[in-house]
Structures are given as structure tokens and as C-alpha cells.
Image (tube, rainbow, N blue to C red; front, top):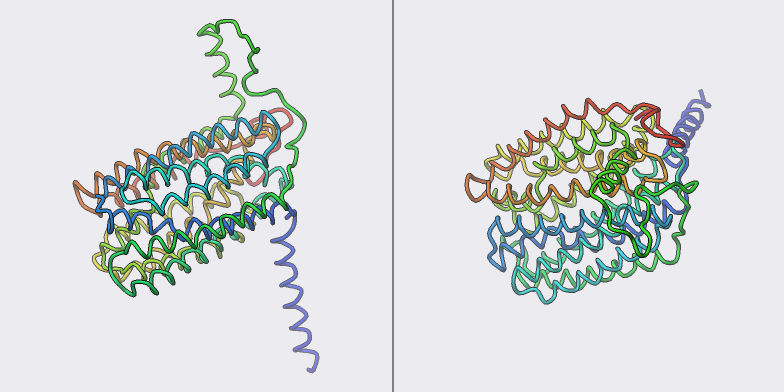
Amino acid sequence: MGSGPAAHHSAVTRSTAAIRAGLLRGITRNVVALGIVSLLTDVSSELLIYLVPLYLANVLGASPSIIGLVEGIAESVAAVLKLASGAVSDRFGRRKPLVTAGYSTSVVAKALYLAASTWPVVLLARVGDRIGKGIRTAPRDALIADSTPPESRGRAFGLHRALDTAGAVVGVALAAIIVGSIQGDAGLLSADAFRAAVVVALVPGVLAVVVLVGFVRDVRPGPSAAPLVAPRPIAPEPVAAEQVGRDLRRAVRAFPAAFWLFVAAAGLFTLGNSSDAFIALRSQNLGVTVRDLLWLVVAFNVADALVAWPMGALSDRVGRRGLIALAWGIYALAYVGFAAAGSAGPVPLLWILYGTYYGVIEAVGRALVADLVRPQVRATAYGIHAAVIGILILPASVIAGLLWDGVGPAALFWFGAGCALAAVGLLVLVRPTPRDAGPGGERSVTA
């Protein structure tokens, strides 16, 4: 009898050790360091991200259409740069210089908010911040994949997402504390509270760059491969239209059909996935104060962080597509809730559902992209995927603003839920095969 508690304790210890080993297997120093960089950057970014649309609406008097335009332009600019930076990273086989440039640019851009007395200045600051994100995202994701064995990619991206989101929790909590201490439970954001938040946000942004420079190292993506499009001579002859067409076809053929289908499904989903600014505005529209809204965003990020790492690890065992379909289904459910809500009562649950969607899609979606393409074009693939999503955010945000102004706040959420369900239908067609990965590529059997 006496050995019962000891045996139970031993079994619990073994179970805990097995779970820890399952989550940490294949995790490298680079992955941890990049996770810390993202944690610090998200403290900086998320401290401001939900205050910016409220500053535009509450202080500068911008309409939802203007807010949609600001968010859409900023994200679309970032999208084009994600494509370019991914291609450049693959061409030269280096990731860290672009990653460093991207994080540094975002820090400088945030300082512009201190001078933002009109919405075009806010647009300039948002575009500068997103330029930094556009430069760093594809090579950073490729560096995580390069630093991780294929069978552990879900864990690596899950850990990175969990640390990233932990930073978001801290950042939004700091925003709530700053806003509460300056303006209490006022329904509208004040200019003083916004500027105080900007000053605080600059500190972790600078620390992130210091960690990146000191602790992250470049990893070669694998044996060199011919670039997607052969480099031109220094003094090229005039290029015929047929040659341009051949180069384009060659670039397209470098990626398998399953990759393009996934990009198409993600693009369809994105068309209804307007900026999170509209969820913040909808919450305020339903009666949530600025301070309480920020605490709801904390809960959203906690849900995201708790889900990301274990769901990433689960995708290594059970597959990616089903989990991505689940994430888009949860998103549709949350958007239906925001559309149908008549008061602030269901808003907390809807934010938690939305955070659960984020936790699944960010880790599992990025791991699936790595599964579908050859290592030598991985950063370009991330750039293409991010570019399609980012470019479509502009029409998505403009449509959302027009629906809000012309039909009503609920309309944009019904539209988003419909696009998500349609994307799930297209995702069914994404069926990677060994041949899809191309010569020298690899394919996860769980893809």
C-alpha cells in the first residue's frame, strides 16, 4: 500500500518527461533565440497594434473606410517585400542580414507614431513597420526550417509561435495597464495614453535587435541549387517576350501543384479575413471599453500561446491539412458570433475562439509550406505564400470598411465566415505526393 503514492508520483514524472521530450525534440538554439526575438518584438508591436485603429477612430476621427485603407495598404506593402526578401535570401543562401534589417526597420518606424497628428502620418508609420515585417518574415521562417530536422518542424514553429504570442500577451497587458493608469475606464482612447504606449513600446523593440545580432547564426539551407530565374549578365542583350515567359513558367514549375493549391486556399480565406482592427472596433461598438478590450486581447493571446506549440507538435503526428481546416472552421464560428452579437456579453468567448484559430494556423500553416517545397526554394515559397495573403489584405480591408459603412458592422463578419468555409472546401484538394517535392526535396508523411 505504501508504494502506491510513490508509484503514482513516478508515473506522473515519467509522463511529464515524455511530454516535455515530445515538445522539445529537434528544437535548436537558433529556434529558441529567434523565438525570444519574436517575443520581444511582439511586446513592442502588440502594445500598439490594437491602439492604432482606436487612435485613428477616437482621436483623429477617421472612418472605418479610412482605417481599412490604412491597414490594407500597410499589409500589402509588406506582402510584396516578403516575396522579394524570400527570393533574395534563397539567391544568396543567407537569412540573418535580411532578418536583422527587417527587425531594425520596424523599431525606427514605430517612433513616427509620436509625431502622428493626422491619419497619413499614421499610415506612414504603419507602412514602415510593415516594411520591416515584410523584409524579415520569409527569411526568418526559412531560417527556422533550415535549423530544424523535418520531423520536428511542427514543434519548432509551434514553439516559435508560442514565444511570439507570449510577447503579445505581455505587450497588450502593458497597454491595458498604461491606458488604465492614464484614462481609467473611459470608453474612448486619449492621445496622451497612446503616446505613452509608443514610448514604452520602443524599449523591447531595441532589445530584440540586440538578441538577434548576438545569438542567432546563419544556417546554410542545403546544397546549392540553380536559382529560379537565371541571373542576367551585367550588360544584357534585349530580352524577348518569349524568354520572359519561359522564365516565368520555370519559376512556377519550381513549386508543386499542392503548394499552389494551398496558396489559393489561403488567398480565398484571406479575402474575408480583414484586419483585426475591425474586431477591435466591433467590440467597442458592442459596448466594450478601451481598457476592457485590451484585457480581452490578452485572453486572445493566451489562447493563441497555449494552443500553438502542442498543436504544432500534434501536426507532426496526425497531419497538417485537417488541423488547418479545423482552424478555419473555428475562425468562421468566431466571425458568425461577432456578426450575430447584440451586446458585449459573448465578446470574451469570441476573442478566445479567435485566439484558438490563430494558435493553430500560424504554427501548422508554416510547417505545411516547408513540407511542400524543396529546401533550396523554401524562403521564396514563404515569400509567395505571405505575398498572396498580404496583397489580398488590401481588398479585404477595403471591402470590410465599405461593408461596415454601407451595410453595417455585422456584414463584414458574415462575409468573412463565408470565405473561410469556402477555403476549407478548396483545402481538400491539397494532396502532396513524393513527386511534388521535386528532386532532392523532402515531404512530410503527415502533410
